[in-house]
Length: 363
Ligand SMILES: *Cc1c(COP(=O)(O)O)cnc(C)c1O
Image 1: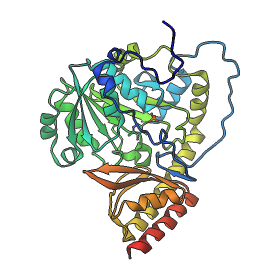
Image 2 (image 1 turned 180 degrees about the horizontal axis):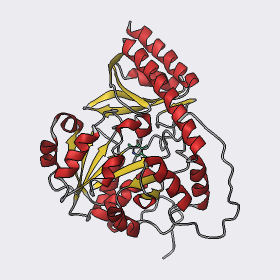
Image 3 (image 1 turned 30 degrees about the vertical axis):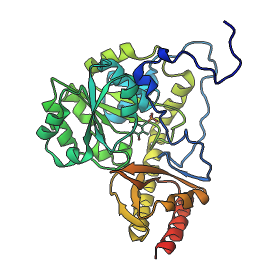
Image 4 (image 1 turned 135 degrees about the vertical axis):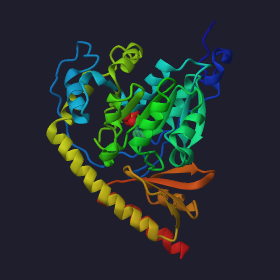
C-alpha cells in the first residue's frame, strides 16, 4: 500500500496498548517551550565548569559500568563499588526498579503525594498500579500506620528531601518502615537533593536493610543535569536482578569520562562550597518571600528550591513577562503554587525585583 505523504495520517490505533493510549506526555520543566532569561524552573545548578575529554577514541563500545566512576562514587558515599549501579540519570534508576520488580497489570508502587512526577509516569508507562498516599501520612503517622496503608505495593518511593515540598523524613523512620516491610516491599529513597542536607542521608541503612535502595544524581548539586548521570545504591543481592534488566551499554564513554572528573576530590570540595552558597542564598530568598504581602505560604524545607503559595496566581504571568521562569504547580487542589530554584545572586535579584513589583500591587 502506498504511504500517504500527509504527516498527520494515522497508524492503526488498535496497536496501542490502553495504558499507553491514555498517557499524557510528561511535561518536564524543559519540554515546555518557554521563553525567558532567568531559568529557575528545573532545580538546576547555576554553576558551570568546563570539562575537557581525556578519552579521544570512540570506536569501541564503552565499559558497561565504568570502574573509575564506581570507585569514586562509592568512596564519596561510603559504600563498596559493588553496591553502586551507574545509570542515565536517577530517572533511569526509577525505571529500572519498576521494570525489575513490578509485573505489569498486577503489581503496584506506593508514593506520597505531592511528590516527584516521574514515579507516576514510570508506573503508568509500564502498566503498574499506583497506591497514592499523602505526604501528610508520611510525616504525621508512625511507621506501622504507614506500612498498613502501603498494602501490597512492591516499591515504596520516599523522596527525601521531597520535591516539591522540601519535606524530610528522618532516616530512623525510614529504617522502621524498611524493617516492617522487610519481606514484602522495597523502600526506594530518592536523594536527588541530599547534598543540600547531607547529614540526613539514608545511605547507611543499605548495610542494615536488604530492602533499602537509595537513588542519587549528578544533576542537582553536582551541576551536571546535561550529563544525565545517576546512581542506584543498594546491597549487591538486590542490585543483581537490576543488572540483568539494565541496557547493555547505558553509559557512553564521553559521559563516563566527565563523570569521573566531576567526582575528583577537588570537584567534590567545590560542589560542597557551592552548596554552602546556595543554601545561604536560599535563606535570603525565604526571608524575602515571608516578608512579601503577595505570598500566602512559604514551605520550609530542604533542597535547592523554595515552594510557595501566591495570593494571586496572576503574579506568575508577571514573572514570565519579566523573563523570570519558575515552576508553577497545582498543590493541594490549588493552582497558585510556585517552586523557585535557587540560582546565582544575579538570578535571585531578578526574583526580588519581581517580588517587589507584585508586592507593590498587593499593598
Ligand atoms: C531532578 C530529580 C531527579 C532526576 O534526576 P536525573 O538524574 O536528572 O534523572 C530524580 N528525583 C528527583 C526527586 C528529582 O527532583
